[in-house]
Image (cartoon, rainbow, N blue to C red; front, side):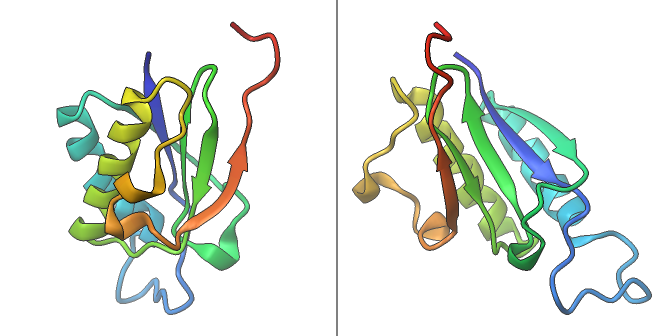
Length: 123
């Protein structure tokens, strides 16, 4: 079953300077996640605003009939992008979207914002 990484491309961290950095932090993070996700056979999509502005950069890891997770407070770095993809891969390989804490990549620990249970009867 497919796991998606939805990336907020309008996220701007508190110190974002549009003159020094024309692309938003979310766009930069998306640019780093997308090629890594493709290699991992994960789907990605961009959206404008996940409404977690105080926790920018935000992503959602989701799959049909699985528990979905919103994560934030990332930086647009290779390390953070890879941690997100590594976690999404574990999510994809799980039966219900839940990944035991001991398996979480270090780079996602402390970044979880919310957990969204699947819609009942959607199998």
